[in-house]
Image (cartoon, rainbow, N blue to C red):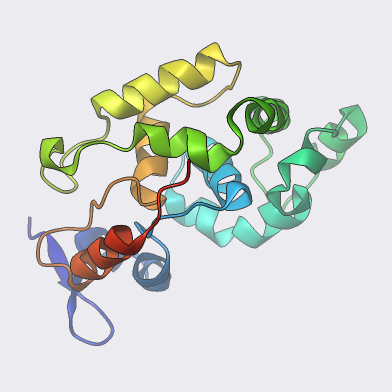
Length: 202
């Protein structure tokens, strides 16, 4: 299988972009760029949790609905959600109505609020798990890493839910903790430049 597929402009992109047209803008403008915004980091780890057992296409198509349903993923607000909110979310046809994942998102918001108090920010915490790029597997050949296993284990110890090593690895790929764009993808170097210019949070 070839690692790339021609994009709308004819230039090569990661092969998975060719699945559906809406993946191209997500790939070109978001996937793999380093993120230090706590709300975006929280949103992404929640959406990756919702994706478990489903396709990213499903979650991406519903992303705006998720944002509306979960207060823009402002975790300090989501942390205060209660049974009334759970009942509301279970009837919201615009999102994935999975009680366990909904309850996990509210729980994780509470854990995120605690983490900010303990670590200063979610960004400072997550970026401590950035792997050495020299030790990474070939792009898009792995679904976990020793760092994603370690991060998953630590999050679970802190009380987070639906954060297995594969979910966490997908989060790390998307949020730029690793550059997993395929060799030959025109955005691999674009993302690498963004990572070189990125100031790691402390």
